[in-house]
Amino acid sequence: MTATSVSPNENRTPDELREIWQTDEILWFKDGRWGLCGYGMPNGQGKTWTNNATVFKLHKMLGQTLFDLMHRVDVQFTAPPHKEWWWEWQKSILLLRSMIRAYRIDPGTTLDIDPKHVRNTRRTFLVYPIPFFGSRVRQEDCLDQAGWALSLLGEIMQHSTNEYADRLSGPFCDMVESYIRGAYLRVATKYFGYAADDIRTKPDFQIEADRFGSDKYKPQDFLPSSEQSTERPSISWWPTENDLARIKGIQYTTALAFAERWPMTYLEGEGDWESTLPGIEDRVAGGDPNAPVVKTNTQVGGQAPA
Image (cartoon, rainbow, N blue to C red; front, side, top):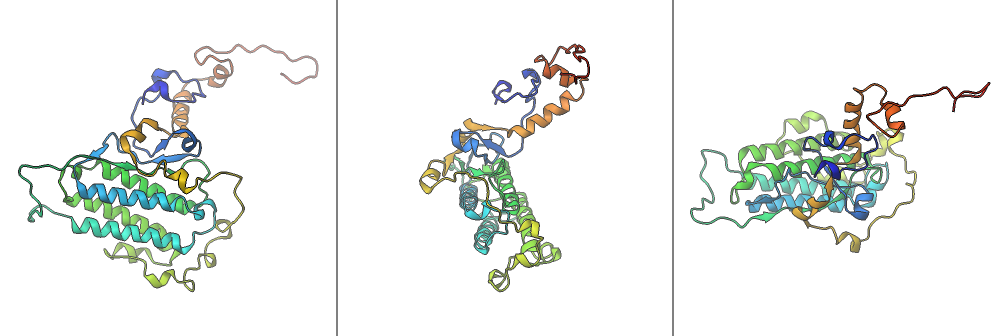
């Protein structure tokens, strides 16, 4: 992405001073209607493909699950999600954990597969864009988990374990496990009544099935009323299944052509730069960021200045 492709330039920052770094943040999928609705995608920092069939499968599984969950009605309200949302969320986490443990190969252990003369065909990662930026998603804990998952997807894409045929390195698996613990800490303590130590001290922690029962899953009993508001959102269209088929599993190289930074990010960065120049408001008001505006006293009689 070039400096001149960034818009809008509301603060009139010179192009040569904008976007001087790349970014690790979650990317805006700025493609037509999806861009207008604030859809996001993981940031792979240019690592668009993998040699590792196992990594490809777990990356796809997590992306598909996130895509499904973030298009459910639960995300449209500030009220707690229904238990089915968390049930599907946990199933994906447990499957992810079982996959990385099954294929983990640490140094000093015997390789399950040690190819000598062949190599996997490279596979391009798939992208499942989701509503993320702006105010379309109102359920903050669902949005928090979406950010967690998008960040993890980006980490997976950039990890060196993508060079292996099928096995997963110890550092890769440890990284994924740390993300899983973080996700559980956010949800199990708030919605299911677990203590933080239950999660930190138990490698195989999971939310027991009976906690999802109607007699036990009662977030309305302990969450503040401000988080249980069911005010109707402002009118907005949500995509149908047919609409979603257009963006379900896009090759990352294709999606990357529409990737940009969410505007708030670089506008804040411009604020850092422009705050070092005195009188920037005058320059912007005058239409020229490099030339100060000379104000004249236009006050007449008892009238306020124009």
